[in-house]
Length: 117
Ligand code: DGP
Image 1 (cartoon, protein in one colour):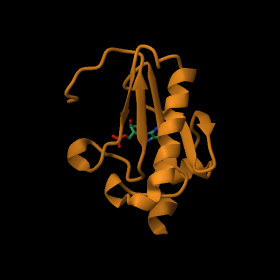
Image 2: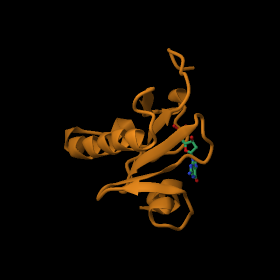
Image 3: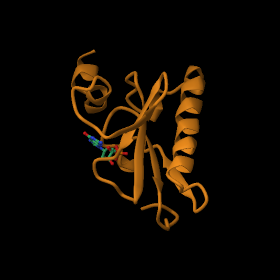
Image 4: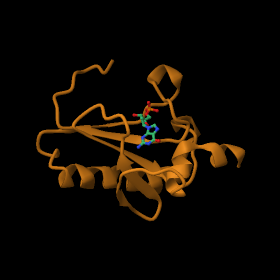
């Protein structure tokens, strides 16, 4: 509970911290990343606090589907579906997870290398 009170993304959900929101569903909020790494860079988060991908289980299946389908809808809306886009779920410090509330990055609008750095 204490973690959820101080979590920056929970604060965005509660509108205690401003964010440029683009879409939401019953369980998912989408907003533009404050530090974009691509011409289109949107974050999709569950409205309820889940700290990391390590905390996911089968019961989260419908939520994950909701996140991915909203991301693909937004990719169409942002017109990056044709050129291509990337969905990223950084999990843990070595992968670069800096906010302990799961977030799916939707990145597009530029060429991307593989493997990612
Ligand atoms: P990651 O490194 O995977 O944990 O990505 C966290 C992302 O969250 C990073 O790209 C910057 C973004 N971010 C952090 N704080 C805020 C915020 O207060 N508002 C918005 N819009 N994005 C944020």
